[in-house]
Image (tube, rainbow, N blue to C red; front, side):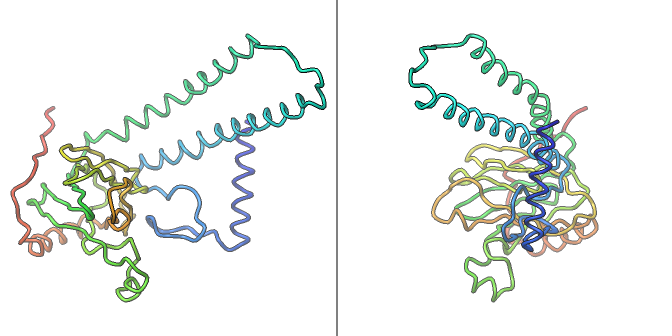
Length: 288
């Protein structure tokens, strides 16, 4: 309980300091850049919210208590066993009880964390209730999206503005907005199948709790769901060093209502008609 109290004090100090300096801002969506922003992005996916809880409310207090305790031991040891206080050095070589303690305590901490961690890992990988599939392919240096459930709509997504001048001219976010964002409906369980056409990339959107490698010749799957009422733009980035323009292949996801998504599908069928290709994969149906 003392550890929790200490963390609450630390959080309040930082919050008050940020408010006093006028730096405390909450972004409505996504990786919208905020000056001096600290911490994880605000999650929208339920599993992502649990990931943030696991990090902020479980791991941070434990890490803080361990760090403060180890720092105290180091300072105490430097003071207690300094040459000035111990002109005649101790010849102690070991302490059995102490050695058992510093082995057993970390094990117990890991055992206490394990149920929360393993459950979260399982939930993060569970896509059995997916209502929609999207294939994502990483390239040097852009993303391609395919919608097998919507007559195999396919298109590429490229960055719009690399410089401040280009961003101002087009009225877009530098290094974030793309020409063709991935469009998804809210209130829908979505399975993304991620691969690469060249080198290893990583499709990462913090608000969805997704950070998955795109590996050539392999499909990695992940799932997320954006609740209804959370429509808007969400941003992410390639999180695996992939070459010269690694910093210039952002991820933009536009979440819309189911009705608007149906309208977008009809429009996209015409807009990306020239991209019609044979599907590069098939999603197996789950048999009851």
